[in-house]
Image (cartoon, rainbow, N blue to C red; front, side):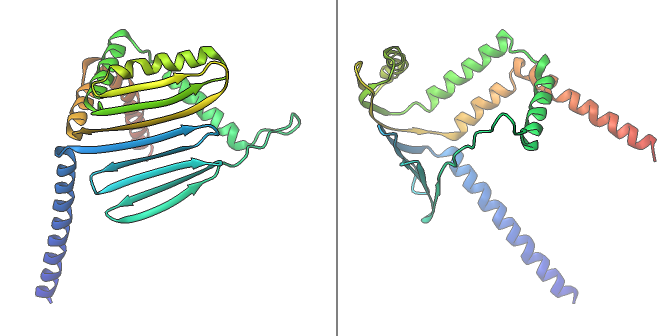
Length: 243
């Protein structure tokens, strides 16, 4: 009997060890090996969107939005899952009807969260560290090629100029081609975006870890989590004093 029990435990431990080892190896492969990504989006009027992203041959995600329906398809290791989403129309509340209790609970929770975060301020060192981190991450994930072409015109001409100003820095990326024709006299949205590149996830993870452990962010985490620890200690002390 003991021999059978020992054999079962041995097989169970070996199985768990194999699963954990396989998971760690897959994680190590995903983190170390470079990942190629490709993307394509078409934004047209009436509003529609289609795009796809491929990570090696392992994962592929496709999305298409047309006629108010969002179709999504996820393929993992050859297994495909398709799901759609249709937005539900919002019912306007009349002046006589009372707000739902759910909305009231959400407002109270939001008010409590704002009260807790009222003392937190974004100091200049914290803002500087965040901007540096964002700049480094954008440089790491910078695509090898980026093409934005088409025609764009919004209802207000100044909004069109704002969009063109936002797209202007993208043309400075190496290998980028931004050729969007502005239209000032009508509403037009027919833009095609194609991009692709390569990134290594562990480089991004290391940069985010450096940001999280920087001096400004350490003080941020201390102010954020120290009150939680104090509340836990006080609750523990009250529970021990009241058997």
